[in-house]
Length: 189
Image (cartoon, rainbow, N blue to C red; front, side, top):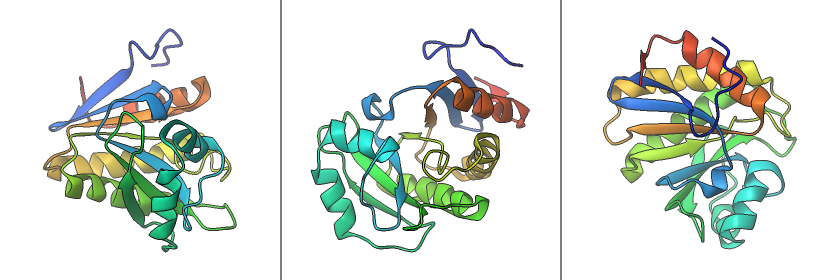
């Protein structure tokens, strides 16, 4: 069900057990959740896109902390403070290497490791962008299928995480994630 009238004030939500998944157009750097996720490269330098927005809003200290923890293999994550962001933590998911390319396997692994890191933090809420769809050039709908699939597999075993927000840039990204979320066997929230 495509709903062009859907807004950030009326996001699509579905429940998977105790976890509510929400899809909205939003600036991830402004969300008041416990952890925000950066779609990172494996060295964790923060250039443009989501990384640049987080760095501009939260301060260069976030990048400095992340780079001190890298490099890591693609698919792994590191956790830093959030600087002056409303969130408490930034989970940096190494979605791509220095070639700035990614694939479904890397996105799936980075998503799973992000969710495990949020659990380890005891985070109740987190916000994720669409991994690899900016500079990485990965197709939006396939990204939605991979990431939401990983979330729906994770949700039944979640201990602390209760809210997962997909904070997306633009109507095309939102509609792609809404389409996939509506196709999954969750419950309306």
